[in-house]
Length: 68
Image (tube, rainbow, N blue to C red; front, top):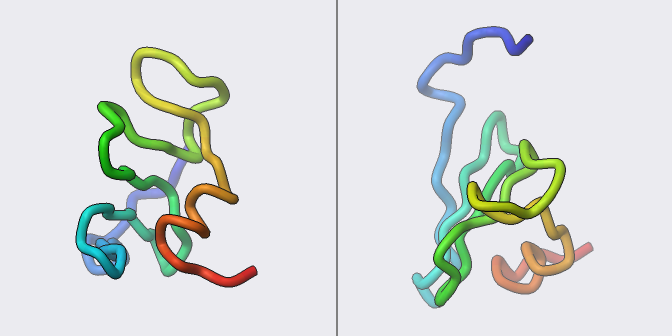
C-alpha cells in the first residue's frame, strides 16, 4: 500500500523538443509519454497491455535526454 502523497511532490518534466512529458514523484520519474505512442510508459505496470507499456529506462533516457 502506498502512503498518501502531497500534491507538491509531483512535477511534470517536458522533453527539450516539447513533444514528450514525464511525471516525477519526489524527483523520481514514474511515467512518461513519448510522441506518437497512444499509451505511455509506467513503473507501475508489470507488463505491457491495454493500460500502457511497462517502464523502459533506456527509452526514457533517450526521449528526455538524461545521461546515465
